Length: 453
Image (cartoon, rainbow, N blue to C red; front, side, top):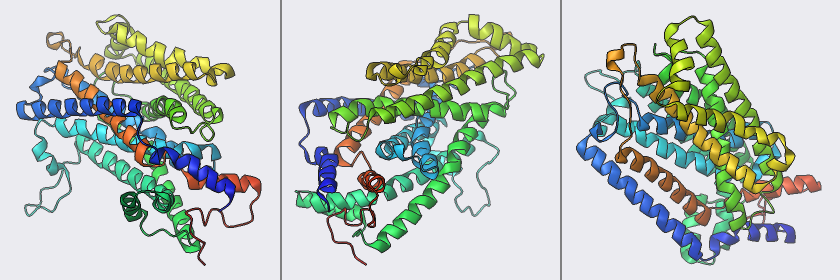
């Protein structure tokens, strides 16, 4: 291995072997406390029932589905960065794809929690699986809840395989360099006997590309299926064909915002600024700007169709209930965060300013959560019959579940940054060799073992 490769490997893996700092331990303790809060809230919810939520007969969906859709959207950036940008040979993805893929997995776990408990009797959730039944009774595929189960479990499974396959060469590098015998054994088990031979690299490249091709349509299909939960109904504000592309654009929008929120501080704390550079953040900020314009167009088309359709119920919702109703503050805050704030990224200075991009990313995440709140709660709280109108107020259990899921997510990201390479070292070095015009087989000996024929 060349000195350059050796130094790059050492710099990328240094924080894995470095003892945890005091600040890291404090953040981890906070995350574990939040995870305990999540477990306690789930225990209370399952033992008592969903009556502890703020849902009522009119607003049957509240924080449960709001947070489910929000978390699924968060996970979309990882698949887009990993699969679609790989298929299009966008080399700037190599420094950020590993962390984005991990973010996807943890977001999917947080998302799956909500439909699991939303049924009210989670111990019967196995009925939604296509299990062999002697009575010939199968899952009810007419139910949108089952569509979510199929779509999200498929998405999570493929994302996990894609993330793990990409990790194998770097796990082997950790196996060969770890100072601890226990770490060498653990990393060796997960490295699956990787030796960096030409055959290994050939099979790995093919498998990685096939998983990328399999993941690519999932970016479009998963959130489209989630949007069908609403679009197949006849409720004003939901019954529209624009929801699938509109939801996908919003998912990528919020997903890239979360990547920036995670990687901006992590790249500095972990000493990875030499591989996660301003160029990467600039590219992600441009995608946020582009998808933000798509979301803004979706909002405009919703209002246009409410006017053009001639439906009094649609017009009342979009031109009276949302802008002037009891939840008007959430509606206007949503428009500000999702439509106005991202426009600062037209400026190259703003795209390269860490405080500005971090603030914009946080506001986008808030705005996309408010969008789900407006779509679900504001559409439900005033039904066709005025006698059934009712306001929705979340309870402390709703808030605790959401807060706990956030801290559980960040706890998993902290553990990921500590024990797994946050940057795909093999891909970064391969890109460097290609740029330098290397004539050898790229990084075959990068795990510290001589290349085998």
